[in-house]
Image 1: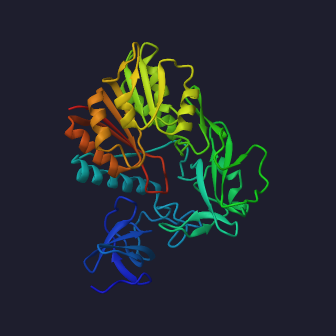
Image 2: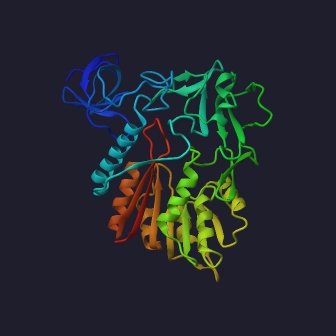
Image 3: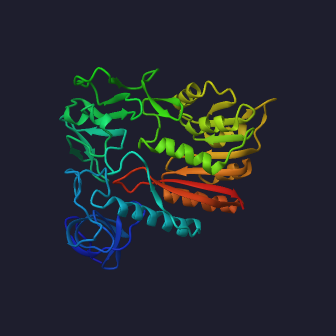
Length: 419
């Protein structure tokens, strides 16, 4: 088969959406993953990558459009432009249907689970714009700021990001020049109005004049600045680049959803794995009461400090630092410091790579009544659900949330019970 040049235009009939946001087509017997298109469309596409088994391409001309296609609101989106958004060209209802289709396919193919998925809207961004409270901007050698192209180090200069939260846009990061910087991270809290810019330097950077409310730092100081997040009746301190949900409505929605999924009782023992700043540990601590016990486990040192500070008024909640699998094997806790060998409830929110077989096995042995698994990756979640099934745990509830509009990403919550 002759090679396909990266500049070649090929005509394609577009099929179903795949995990990762591209749609699937075929060309001369090979699979083609095509961006900037929709199922059912006919397009001309430019090949951007050829591998032994498949091609990647960008749809550059729409010959027959889907009824779900809309004009992209962002002037920087499209083939060969900013890679931050996958689906600016798709109506919001259709975006959620596409995400549901991907999750259903992954559950069926990887976990062996047949389940209808409905992707729920997350309050706070009815038009799918202005929701992202944490932005990673890249900076060119000439100081121009922008966002990277898809699967590329090329930077698209921009003067505004439409999915960035208004509190981020107040900083004006995109409208300044940053000589000597490699990147600028902008962080804002929709609830408290706290704002922070973190400068990543190549060498000696010249810092443009900033709003007095903004704390600008370089490197890794011993006491990094923080923003405060407002969820429930509590303020949560999140330092520097620490993890927090980027959609302003996601953290309170997920906190409520986890409590609904786990159904905690007074006096329960609960474990929060990959606990970050302590959100789930905190709401569980309030639910199980002072005669219960909650143990949070987190590997990142600053996140542990934040969680301990945030939950300092809950003496029955402890935060342990270390890798989850090691801490679960070593931790001594509770009255009399007995070994943790059974918890009524477990919640985990691992990184995109998922929990994996060793952690799943330990959780399956540890958990007594219910497990709540929060994930932003349908593939690794489905893999781990299959592992839980092998350990005797069954899927009893499943929810999906549109916490990342205009992109192919989705937040998921799976509830498991002993099967």
